[in-house]
Structures are given as C-alpha cells and as structure tokens.
Length: 99
Length: 463
Image (tube, rainbow over all chains, first blue to last red):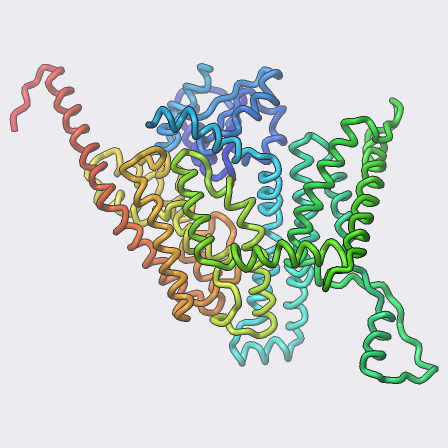
C-alpha cells in the first residue's frame, strides 16, 4: 500500500485536498494512505511516507526535503498550483501514483 | 517577464524563506501560541470592566485564580520562547531537540538577574532611612524577578536560543561531546551528549554577561538590559508600534504570495511576530492593571494583524469569495467560490490564491496587494478615533471571521465583529472590477468550448 503525505505551512489547506484525494481513491478502489502535515511536523511521518507532495506555497522547501529524503527512495514533488487551488483530488492522486 | 521572475527572483525569495534561523524563530513562536492564548483569555475574564461582575468574582474569591494563568504564561513568555526556538532549530540540525531546548533554557536563566529578598528589603530600608530593631530578622530567599522573563526578555530569548543551538550543533558535530561506549542504553548516552556543550555554552554566556556588566554603561547591568535598551526598545518603538512598518510588512507578505511563496510564514512570523507579540503582551499587562480597552498602549499588535489584515486569509479575499458564489458568471469561478467559501471564513484561502489565481497574475496584483493595506489603514484610523477598541487577545489560526473579532476585542468585541462585516464589503468592492474581467474571459472561453463540443458532435447549433 502506498503512503502519501501532503505538506504545507500549517497543514490546513492540504488537509482539505486530502479529503478529496481519499474520495477519489475510494471511487477507484485504490488502496492508499493519505495524510496532511505541517512542514515542521513532517519528521513524525518520515518513515511512513513513500510519496511526499508539497503545497505550492511551501514549494521553496523542495530542495531541503530532497536533500534529506530522496536518498531513502522517497518520491518528492510540488503539487501543480491550479490543481491545488481547485482541490482536484483525482488529478493530484493520479499524478502522484504516476511518479 | 514571467520567465525572468521564475528564473531569477523566485529562487532568491525561496532562499530567504527557507533560511533556517528565520524558520526556527517562526516555528518557535507558532509553538508558544497556546501559552499566549491561555494567558490572554484569563486576563480578559479577569479584567472585564463590568462593575457587578468584578464585585462578584472578588467576593467568591475567583479573582486571584483568574489572574494566575497570565502570570505563568505571558509574564514568562521568554522562557517558553527560548526553549521552543532552540527546539525547532535543533530539529533542523537533526540533533536531540529536547536537550538543545534545555541547554538554551538554563543558559537564558543564567544571564537573567536573580535577586535576594534580603538584598531588596535592605536596599529599601536603607534608601528610605528606616531603622529596623536589631531583633528583626530579614527573610533571605532567592527570587527570579519577572522583569526579563516576559515580553522584555523576548529578544534575548531569540538570540540565546539561536546562538546556543548553533554552538551545541557545532560541538556535537566536532565530536567534543562525551560519547558512551556501545552497550550503554541510548537514553543514558543521550543525557551525556548534552553535557559538554551545556558546560561550554553556559560558561560562555555567563562570561559575556559579566563582561557587558563590566562595561559600566548607564543603566546597563548585563545582556538583558543591554539588548533590551539598545535593540528591542528602539525596534518596538520604530518598527513594532507603527502603522507604516505594519503596512510595509503586509506589502512584503503580499508580494511574496504573488510570487507563490507563503508570505506570512516567510517574513511575518519570524521578523514581525516577536515584535507584535511583545506589544500584545504589553497590552495584556496594561489591561490587567486596569487600563480601559480604548486606552491600551499598542494599537499595532498580533491580533491587529490576524483580525483585520488577515480577515478571510492573506489578501482578505472573503468578500471576493462570497461574490464568486453569489454572482460569478463562469462555471470555473462559481465552483471555486463554493469549494473555498467555508475554509475562507476560517482564514484558509489557498484555493482562491492558487486557482483564481492570485499568484503571478498581473490582473489581480493590484487588489491583492491593496485590499489588506486599505483595510489596515481604516482599522487603524478607527482605533485611533476610539470607535474600535485596541485588540488584546490573540486568536488561533483557523478561528472563523466574526468569532475572531468577538474574542480579540474583549467586552467591546461586537464592534470588531461588525467592522469585520465592513471588511468583507470593502474586499468585495476592491476586487470586483478586476475580478469581473477574469470572470468574463473565463465565461466566454466556456461558451466557446461548449460550442465547439456541440459542433464536433455533429449537431448544428441554432440560437
């Protein structure tokens, strides 16, 4: 089962997107665990994450995260800002699983 | 132009935003939010200026209980700040967070003046030329006075937390720490890890503190009074409690957002929150001392930012969002409005920011930057005119509009809540002319594609 973690400044807006992604996963019968965290608390989930998605507003952290986790095989990307704004759970989930 | 911004400017902005020291300060201040709010809410309950209520809480003995939480929270804010800033910087360095916080805390306390009751009483007796009978025994107890534990010590807290954790990190990396042989339980090994850095750091700061005290400058007896008089006080006066620097902060945050960077967490939290927090704490103290809500010293503070400038998220987009739901012509914006309106009431408006979009969108740059500025200026003028009360209580992120106003304004909160209604209208008025252009464009696009779809499916369109 794939584990996806979404990260933004406070974990508020990503948690909205998580709800939509979970709904999309359920509709397609996909087995994934998706959660949202503020970027400072991500360390609590670092061993529970296969795919790390950053909200575009904290996209500036992508290099830091890559330096820390890419070697462990974690896939890291910034969420497309339009998909993020429209809270397009289906598309973000699809892109994440295709990484 | 867009290319240039993305290639040249954004990486620079990103570098500033991801600076580890700024982030540690901002995360530290986020972490102590409950401390501030608990103290502020109790202060509010303690000082509500309704005579019958005051008589009641005094009579049943509730008053001292209502006063206590603020004493152990806001009056000791620097103690919490020093621990959590060090904690968050250590997290960044991948070092033991608790140990770093602990070292910073005892270092901070080591340079904070400690008095003795006997010395205080003797001083008082001498300066008032009172003579005590020889049989009177003056109680001698060591006391940590609150002078520099609260808002006045915040800058020292920041400096000590950052410096001590940098040194802590360096010492451990350089192998100077005591390492236990294998087989020693990790918990024990961990407690020894902080030992050498702890010694080095506390000694270093005590030496600096004594050296500063030895400078024999007027009114300066150590690091605390030095940093407070030379740095914190001037900063508070010129940058903190000034509408112009407040507007500058908002401008900076909005421009960063325009480039797609979370402006609040990039500049407001690390640079302005320490100042605004100190100003808020001063207001709470004044309120506890019986100063009426309209006479409190600092109009600009943390609540002023979150209740007015951030009413409905960065850019104060709530009015725009309501208009989208209500009147947008295009499907795109109607959908966007509906999906974001509830969260926008709670100050979370990333959907609007990224899907309108506000980011890198020249059409929306003017209202995006101007709306919070205009709102702040109006709120400031109304507070000076004593139509709105000076705000005291900090509201947590995510508190819905109106409720945040009610809480932040204390007994006069209803006025603040009504003004938040006005803010929504102002937001709608400023955004509308610009938004309508976008909406129309998007509406025409939708019509075109609908037409193409119909034609390509082989049906002729007749109007």
